[in-house]
Image (tube, rainbow, N blue to C red; front, top):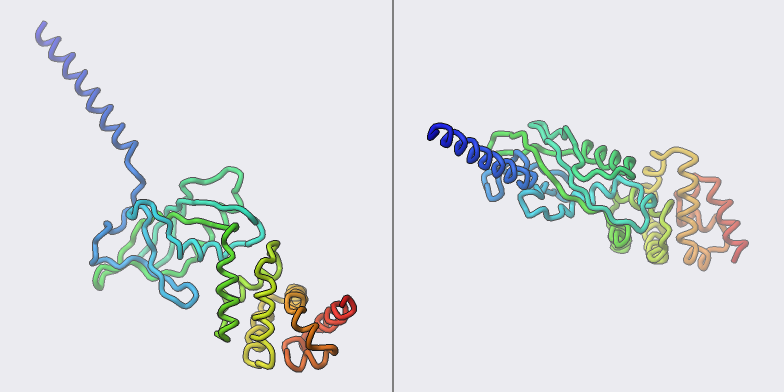
Length: 275
């Protein structure tokens, strides 16, 4: 009888132990396999954004804080018009190998109704050019979980930054041109249109180098995309162009990139006729 009672007790307490063990495991937060927070001997993978070196921030080791720079990178790769007025928070898990290549991208909180956005986010992170994690001279393969925020409500900071760069006459890079192109072609909110147009006007006027930079970027797009962008450039600068130039040839003399596009002359004439 005592043996039976002991056996029942062992089974009961064993089941309780298994229950609490499973419960604790289920409540554990998502964790990566990378270096622990506070391990100062390890340098996490790095990348460049707008010419500045950035370090990946494992969100799971930082109370799931948003990696703001990674968020900006991902959002810069997406069509700003597609989710106008929307905000998304994503948690993305992925591996960075010893060559800095991203593998096994998984969106932890995938949305069934936004499969296209999920796919675009995965592609953007897969293409992120990284240097691998390091511990001294040794390169490491690490698993990382990043929380990113895609904000198309207050996300006009990108175009504001580019407008400021043009106002300072700073050189624009390919990423700046890409964001500027998306803004020209798709933006519905014209809050900053006048500011962007004014700064673009002064950035290009009588500056051959800046005109050449714009032209080099446009040539990568191919026609008819080039023509569409040129038309939008004229439209956004028209407050200043229309006030200063009555003839296209004089305008093209100060903005030499327009000489390469017949559509520019036609657009100039239409805009002039509508004054």
